Amino acid sequence: MDKLIIQGGHVLQGEVRISGAKNAALPILAGSLLATAPVKITNMPHLRDITTMMELTGGMGVRFVLDDQMGVEVYAEDIQRFEAPYDLVKTMRASILVLGPLLTRFGSARVSFPGGCAIGARPVDLHLKGMEKLGAKITIDNGYIHAKAPNGLRGADISFDTVTVTGTENLIMAATLAKGVTTLHHAAREPEVVDLANYLNTLGAKISGAGTDTIVITGVKELGGGQYSVMPDRIEAGTFLAAAAITRGKIKLKQVAPTTMLQIIHKLTEAGAEIQMDDNTISLDMKGKRPKAIRLSTAPYPGFPTDMQAQMIALNTVADGVGHVVETVFENRFLHVQEMQRMGAQIVLEGNTAIVTGKERLTGAPVMATDLRASASLVLAGLVAEGETVIERIYHIDRGYEVIEEKLSQLGAKIYRDHS
Ligand code: UD1
View 1 (cartoon, protein in one colour):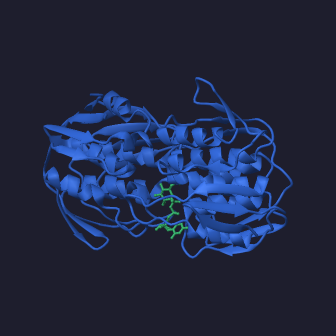
View 2 (cartoon, rainbow, N blue to C red):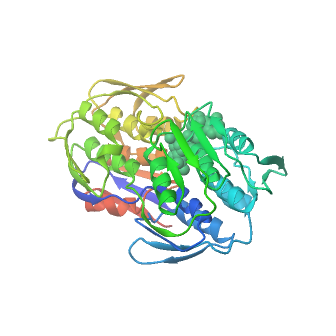
View 3 (cartoon, helix red, strand yellow):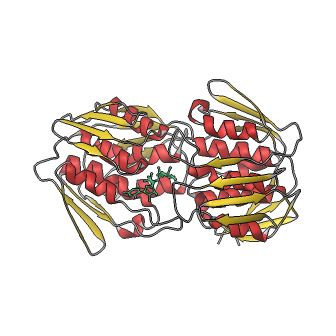
């Protein structure tokens, strides 16, 4: 199994291009199940999760033509199967995103129940309740969700108990072809939700209010085709900024969307980084200084993203002072902490708070990646650790970071992949 091997202690310096956003590309690909004419999607990241979504929708009858410019043509005119099998769903929870499009276009969907997951229970009850409000009949047997709406879905007023990103996306997609108007209250405001809504509107949907907590969808008869470019990945961008900050370096990100990551920029500034940005670049300079410890609490957008929590804990492990990081979105999302402790980090967990006392240095160690963002945080820790860090189970990182070792090497890191 692949491993990443890092020789720590090298300052990151240079420029890096940020890829398209995984969490926007996944719902956009699922949303392509609604398109009755060809679609061209550009700025698609090359990631394991994207391949999984293509395999999943490909199994239903969607055809893809890839170009060499991170573009993909999607042909979804002829869908014959409405099923998401366990084998694929178990590797990627976001597979649940096919439920809304299949149900609303074909009146039928069979999706394997996503199982437990390393970062907490992560149920899909709110997706299902919302579909029922739109008139779907849902049954669960043999580990599969069966959803039926033979006469189509009907618009409804739906209020989420908890802010859910993929839940909001699934119901937006279901509502695009429902008869009448659907209003989603307490909806997720994440930029990826806005990207999906813009994409669907390009295909002919009528969605307004995305980016606020009230989204209104007026059902249309069908969606056509079109062309769309996926937004930049704010979490990949944030991870590279944190990597530069942790090594006291200087970095410029290209093809980013700074306005989607203001909380991350704000916290890195508190850590002592000098940051400049324009429409699509961000430059960070630590001026060779040690980062300062930061306090933060994760929250749905526009709060601090939970997907950057682990990376900020890594930053705090070598910062000056004591940092507090509170995780409010997911239970049990501190699996990286014990791995960092193996590298000498001083972290105490109290409920959903990690109290991190910064040290001058970490020491390299063999560690294990447990989930996607935890893996990224271990890479950051490895970049500042004295000696060698070997990260096992690196397949997690390939789900969400495009050629991370190549991008980091270009910035001066000593990191390579061992295929043995
Ligand atoms: C998405 C992102 C993920 C990110 C997360 C929070 C994608 C593909 N994944 O995941 O990277 O970490 O948002 O920003 O976009 N919940 C319920 N019932 C539900 C749905 C959710 O109780 O039916 C709870 C979850 O357990 C969790 C909270 O709501 O505690 C937020 O989860 P949610 O926003 O749904 O996360 P995902 O959409 O799975």
